[in-house]
Amino acid sequence: MISHHLFLEINGMNYPKFQHDLNIALESEILGELIFINAAKHCRNKEQQHKWQVLAQLETQTLYKLQQFLIQNNQTAKIRPHIRLQAKASGIAMAKLPWKVAMHLLKQGTKPFMQTFERMNQHSNAQTQVFLQYLLAHEQALAEFATQELKGNSSNSLKAVEKLLKS
Image 1 (cartoon, rainbow, N blue to C red):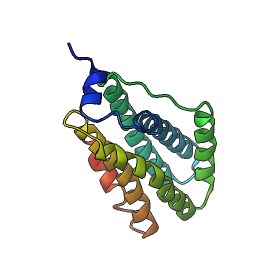
Image 2 (cartoon, rainbow, N blue to C red; image 1 turned 120 degrees about the horizontal axis):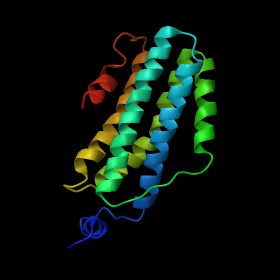
Image 3 (spheres, one colour; image 1 turned 180 degrees about the vertical axis):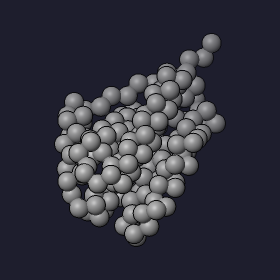
Image 4 (cartoon, rainbow, N blue to C red; image 1 turned 45 degrees about the vertical axis):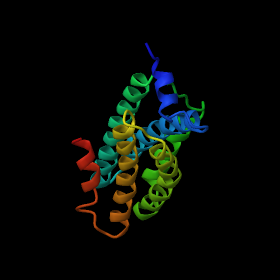
């Protein structure tokens, strides 16, 4: 029987930065989830609080899908020790910032993760493609949310996020 690790290697998923990218993906989801949960908890505006909660739901869903992906592909990932504390502090800060500033930071914050998820997609195979496309799409949905908020389109800003929450 061929091991999952060998299967990924044969199919090209074990490119030089693969482990690094898995770790970044895990950090991204833990960071996002905790930032959004803490932003919601410390936000005074009910509409904004609801939006932070919906973003947190997407991160929770994506974290679960990532954990399933790791198990199915016999992979592990780890995060740096300070990430959870950094995320909590960042979430509290995001709640206290003016909304447009927080949205600008959110949009900027998706860029490095987008690059990582695009690289992972370039190395995907039949086994990994569906999840890796979802991973990239979820980051794009977060950026799209922030873009719509910055444009003042707050009534439809969650559209891309809610679509993924149904997937």
